Length: 92
Image 1 (cartoon, rainbow, N blue to C red):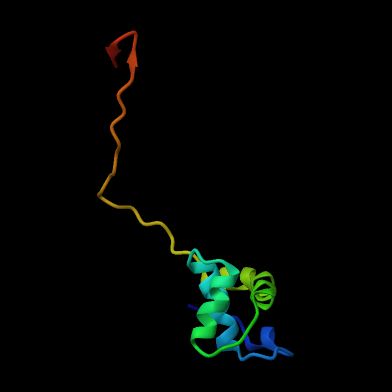
Image 2 (image 1 turned 135 degrees about the vertical axis):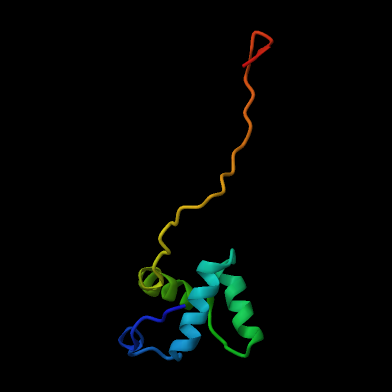
């Protein structure tokens, strides 16, 4: 995962690694803010869920922009679902 420039983290109490881990956990995994707080506490990092929420609001868009998207590539595989429609008892 690409990190935003260090200038984003000026005047923050926690190091950039802690902030990026918290935001990554919140957006990448289906976790609540309180679960992120508990996971960080298990690693010895005492931070409140309100702080994680503020970090997510402030840094979430920057992480999404830095991450980038992989361009779609043509493939020789097709995945189709079968659909069968019955009208008046006749299958179409």
